[in-house]
Image (cartoon, rainbow, N blue to C red; front, side, top):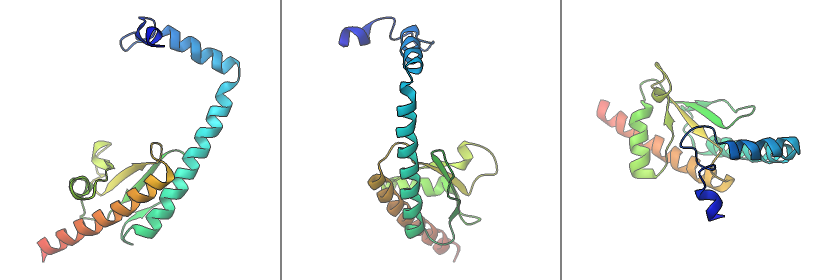
Length: 148
């Protein structure tokens, strides 16, 4: 397998790799992608359900989101005036949890952030939601103390 991985046909330095294209084309012709897609859908659906259930349990009520009908992203909205980028610093440093702030994806999204269900298993997503809830509470408390 190492010989195969090191072959020039396998790595075309960022361009389309004819070998990988051939493998994918053959898998599609044989109908193998259907089983893979079915498993991906199951994984994403299970992850979204697990994460949303955990968010319902752990998030402060001021934080809102809509349960997705598919896909692998969940968008959350913080209360007005609570900056997702500032929260991210707190969350990573003190709670070992991360997310993608809305400002990385567009303008006017300072109070929004995005979570993904595609990488972690259900247990990891639940743990992440608990950490996130704690991070949000701590960050909001700190912001309130600074304005008081």
